[in-house]
Image (cartoon, rainbow, N blue to C red; front, side):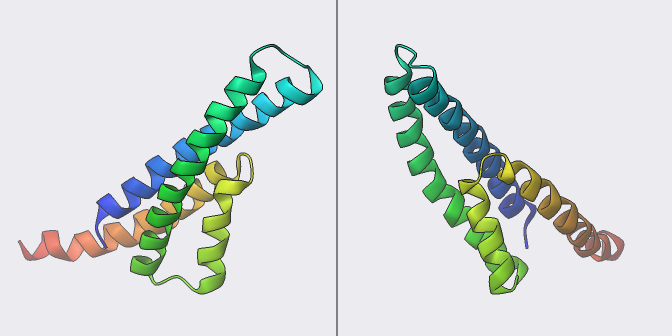
Length: 113
């Protein structure tokens, strides 16, 4: 597996996570605080999160298939983009796990050269 696959996933995990937190804040502003402009903000952030979540799903699925994850783990990572702040924690855990595997894969290649 290439490091770029992990990098794409990490970027989309952060983008999706930030947009989801912004969406939750916008919903609080719209429904609990009745702030002016919160409806437009929520609509804009909701659309952005929706489209970018699709990219997150694609990149997370690509990462999981290349890392040969079991289905349960794959679903766990895919759903992380729907729970506020979960994407940050899941991304960190996945990155730590795969960084060690990537380092092991790269070490023999460096030793042979």
